[in-house]
Length: 139
Length: 146
Image (cartoon, rainbow over all chains, first blue to last red):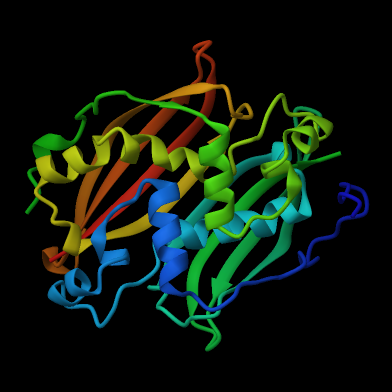
């Protein structure tokens, strides 16, 4: 896949969407180990229930990592300058997440070209889980 | 209520050696199959000296070092009431396997909403590598759900 360049990218362009498999307990266990976030609320249903939750739920940072994949599928990671996420909803077991992005601004600063990308992740019901933004430098 | 005296508190530095096995494990956990994140030759071909740390990986440093747990204990936030509100990364230099990063954080704000039902703690972090070069900055907002 050829990487996008500033000249040909237009405001409104959509990044190729990223579709995830339904969230399951194995994914959460692996992410707990790999990320270093061992909070039992994500991996131990007994703990989650005592905390008043119906079940374990996904780490916010797992959702952000998926949105990161959307961005680095589109441009090499070295072009990423800034990456922000607001966690707007809990991602539950069985949720099927879709990450999307759209170019919302083209900017030039100090002789370098950038685009600002609006990022979203949502489940199969369209409920927003992450609203975010990235700034990437483009050749 | 979280004591506002913690605003300005400096957390102990968290040192994280970046290792290939951990990066591959992280890539697997997030479903990242791009060879750049698994295969050193592919990473080299993409211009990295070794496997690059994916964009959100640096969040692990303070978790691994126990700095996050200690902070939550100091602030009196039970894990069961903890939510992640916002997260931001600013990138200055790539971080790759073989690097050792040090994360130094400070609490920059504590505020509440909904008559204190939700409290927010904002932490700002600077990440340097083994050459004392600033590689990234993080901002984290955690939420204490009462």
